[in-house]
Length: 244
Ligand code: NAP
Image (cartoon, rainbow, N blue to C red):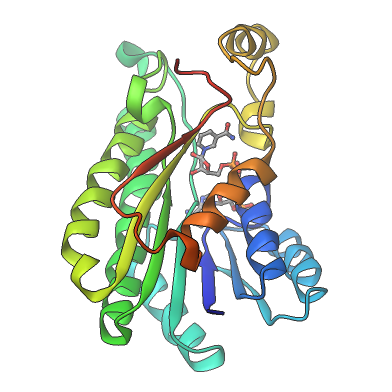
């Protein structure tokens, strides 16, 4: 069934690929970003080429009131949200004993509380509609941990707990909630890492290469589809065999 899909952090990287994939499948899409409105508008333009409605909208997912305002506008403009992809995320890496309170708080605020804000508001909408698909973008760091990412790994592990709890609460109304845990995907986030970290990571990957944003988008699209109606509360690791 075609739905209105909201994808947070969709101006670039994985979120942009998810928006394009869902548009390609015929869903109307809302492309959220923090600040890069022009990039988000360019993604929306590509999505419209598939004949769907696509809207670019900037708001801070960590701000509950801003999420509430945005979702009211979306409901007015496009209708009830049927698919939510909580993808917006940041890194502020550093070793534990050197990590500032600000580095910790920023990552938890955007990655974890941001997802809660959207889940809380869209969940209420979906409960009334008795339908919905929610996909949270976690990370292998949230499962295995990663040196230099105490804040990020905590946020991504938190998302897994949130996914499973929400799946239990919303399941009886036909709403599924799942997580995707990507490994090393080529985006601005991983481009920023030093070359030795990138090469070290590649050696751990069974498939011997980094993933592409489209390869995460394919898994998200499956979880958002009718074909995944009996899948909920799961974490789909999509890492080219990095964790095996
Ligand atoms: P990216 O290229 O750095 O893009 C991040 C996106 O999040 C941008 O669209 C950005 O908007 C948006 N964003 C940041 N803060 C926001 C806020 N407060 N409110 C709304 N939007 C915000 O990231 P990516 O690599 O595609 O990662 C996407 C997701 O996958 C993240 O949750 C990340 O943790 C997760 N992930 C990535 C990898 C990987 O290897 N890349 C691996 C595992 C998990 P602006 O453009 O306006 O800044």
